[in-house]
Structure formats: C-alpha cells, structure tokens
Length: 244
Image (cartoon, rainbow, N blue to C red; front, side, top):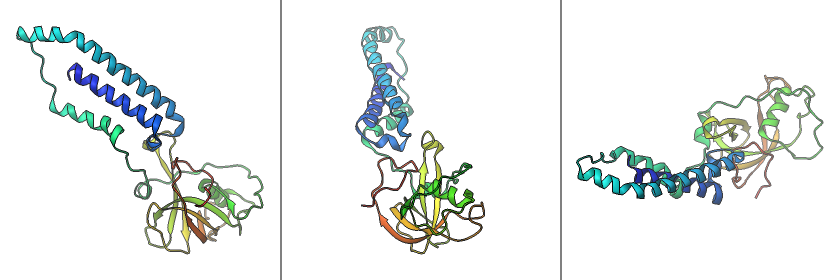
C-alpha cells in the first residue's frame, strides 16, 4: 500500500475513533465505559501517525517521480486494500446495532459467582435488584429471604424457546463485545413483548425446586411490566431504572 493511502487510512481511523469516543456513546457498543480513555488515546495516536505519514509523503514524491522516470515505478495499491477503508469510514458514518435478543439467545449464560453470606434485605417493596443479585438470592441464600418478596428487575426481552413467557435479559461486557456474557431471568405469567423491548418487571420468585439451592430456577411470576427506555450503557447489570 502506497504511503498516501496509508496516511489517509490512519487519519480516517484515528478521526473515527476520536469522534466515536468523544462525541457519542456509540463506543459503549464496542467496549466497557472504563476503556474510553484508551480509545481516545488510540485515536489520537493514529491521527498523529496519519498526519506524520502525509507530511513525509510530500517529501518523497519527488523521489518517487525520479524512480518512475528511471523505470523503477512502484506497484499500484492492490484493489483489496481499499476494503480496509470500510471499517474506518463506518466509525464516522454508521452506528452498529446494539447486541440484543439474537445474541442472547445464542450465547452462554454468565456463571454467577458463589457468594458467602448475604446481608438482610431492605423492607422496600418492590425491592429493586439486578438480575445477578436475584439469581444469587434464589440459588445461594440459605435464609430464603427472597421468598414472597416483590422484586423489580429490568432488562430486555429475549423470547423463550417454548413460547411460554420470555427471558428478561442483560448482556454484560467484561472488557468488550467479544467477551460479552448473558444473564437471563425467566418470566412467567404474561405474553412475551417484542424481542429487545426494555422492561421493568415486578413480581415474585417462581416457586420451583428448593429455594436457596441450585435446583431453584432464576424465574419470576410477573405482577406488572412497564416499558422503559434503553439505558445509555446497556451492557451492564445495574439496578433497575425508573420506569418512563
């Protein structure tokens, strides 16, 4: 690839990274929020390298012209190399779709870490919990404090394989989209809304198996559902949002 083309590619990629990380929230579809400074630094470095390559290229054009005159012309840039511009331009012009139900239905469920000891639950009703905390309470809390408690969970809809209810879902980035994992809670007692709909779901644990052990499913008998806006950072398992 000739130097002017390399310079343009570096400049476009750097500009795209800086635009995505500085002026939009689209970068959250690629990496977790804590990596934003790394994206900004990477974009700045690529931009500077592109500008430097362009400046050096100006000084070498005369030499390249002489080589051509003496029969030493360099090979043209391979056509396939121009495909490298597509991801660079997409950073400026195209926002990739967010990961959602399609990904969740085909990914492994995130293992829930073992927790030793649980604090007493507050008396708040409904009790806001993350999907991870609800799963831990159902399958690990030997005090069975979650029994008969009305809880509120939020996530997006992933259709169930047997069309009985649906899964309330969160996709979690450990580092980036490539290592994403899924947390799902089965919701019983209502028809499934359209896939990828974000909901606040209120209900009680679906009694099955032995509460406080791995035989108990992370499932909810629904009392109420309300649509909510998708959070800006959708790839975490945060406490429920206030329904809109």
